[in-house]
Length: 186
Image 1 (tube, rainbow, N blue to C red):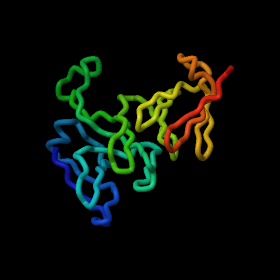
Image 2: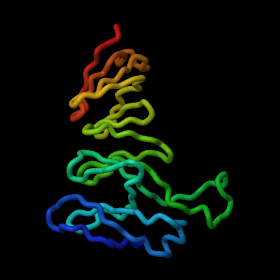
Image 3: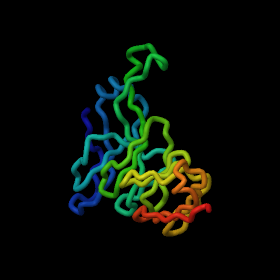
Image 4: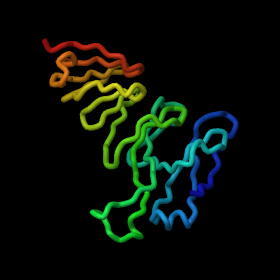
């Protein structure tokens, strides 16, 4: 893949993470059926590409680089459609979109499967997929909450029906470090 920065970041020596707008050469576009997408970005620091990965900001997502501890981007990876989708060989290659969570340094922490909808809890190290809650750094599974509530510092998760009886009740999870305490059902 030949990526070329087309809008160099404004300041080059401050060490901050920045988005760079990139262009993809026509040969690559043709090979991977990239016809209409022109809003790809990459991550740079001091005008240097962090990795040759195509990202898009996507949806209602609004990452605040160098402010948020974690943010989400759509990562695009080379993939092939199965015969169930198309048997036309030339249409099989495509760029698959996967949500991923990155930390403030641009390191990819969690990558989700195709069509998996993740939610990043604002100002925290916690994310959810469906109603399942996890820690970004430790990968710890907190539980599957039927309801949740959030304050400035904590997530309160109703985990009354957890498979593990020792985790049943309301979990008070620290949004910054992921530690938790349980207020048991009984």
